Image 1 (tube, rainbow, N blue to C red):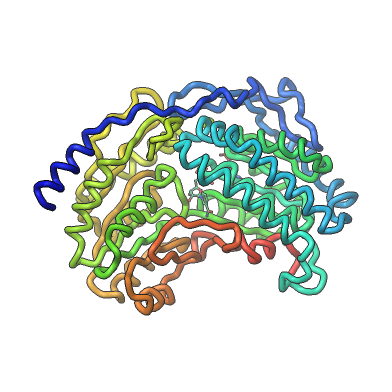
Image 2: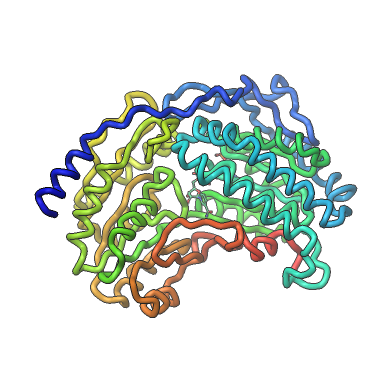
Length: 489
Ligand code: NAP
Ligand code: MG
């Protein structure tokens, strides 16, 4: 860098942004929520409740019903009735109208949904506004288009739905995961019981209001909030024909073990330890942005995060130097501020898991660089962190951290890059950065992962299938493939 460039850069770094907070006024969160069963909200007073908080401030947001096994059972019975009497009988072109209506209502209420998502989850408003909510609407639009074309989807002349789908989702993309689950299931003619994550139930409850606005027939979608016990009750309910689960590998394994003898259909979208591979001929400016997006998007609470950076040795010093400079520019803080890049960690529990793994990285001898940003006093925060001198045996190279922490490893040849990338029990996503298409294809053919991005990272589109291999699970969501998980084929 020339002296002049250096001075300009230092000055830019010194510039302070004025606060640009999004207004909370657009949302009115109710103090108490019941469960959404058979088209109605139940009386919150009739349930045991739990609080959901804003992880950026630890302030309570609402009290939400803890669904019991009996509640789950009522929801399943309602879904079964709706399946038998209404939804499975309805022509696809009629089902499509409801899905289009839901998509339109998500768009109409998008600001409100974005604010609720950011308050409940801690993710930057820029991301909930520009990624989570528009993609959720896009999923409903996309699958609305399939509802009357199932016989042309390549699954036989008259593909049949499975029946009642139990759907369990995590806290990292609460509304988007609900859309990924509901849209294909409904398009294919199934009815649903959805269980949102304990720490992020609110956007699903606004979605329940949207379903009422859309006048979807009672019981077609039921939303039962609660904790792990609510999810477990859904999994073991004999009236459920299919379980679609997104979450940790540990719980996924437990679900598969429990359902193996029953014949219940299962799809599992689990964890990951994605490799982002940078060759020496990669467009470096773009690659640096791709690395940043790959691990710091959504505080690294992303199953397909590029949490292992594999850099070709000849450019490793340059990449590390640029990375350190770039992460110092990340704005960490109030998720409601439109300038914020990295928001709050979703829960105290997740924060302590990140701390544990980062401490293990230091203890095992890797070299840690955390940004010098000031973290707020209240709430759950972790400064963007990069580990160098990481070896493949370190826990930070093997275990999913699910936080804003990157582990950097190096390689010399494409063969070594592939061997290191595949040296994981997971297999969800990888990125390959190179100017040579032939090299990218050679590498991509050899990577064991469900999704491979070329010269980009974390690109999601409803038309494109997403899912893993090995301990990242099985089944695909998105695209034509996503229908298969909800059809008897
Ligand atoms: P988790 O503990 O497995 O929870 C996921 C969901 O399952 C939550 O709704 C949870 O409820 C529920 N649950 C907990 N125990 C259950 C049980 N015994 N039976 C049925 N359901 C149960 O995972 P997490 O820690 O919340 O989420 C992070 C993990 O999800 C990461 O490992 C990440 O990689 C993975 N993930 C994968 C994808 C993907 O597409 N492959 C996407 C996002 C996240 P509570 O929240 O109430 O405990
Ligand atoms: Mg919360």
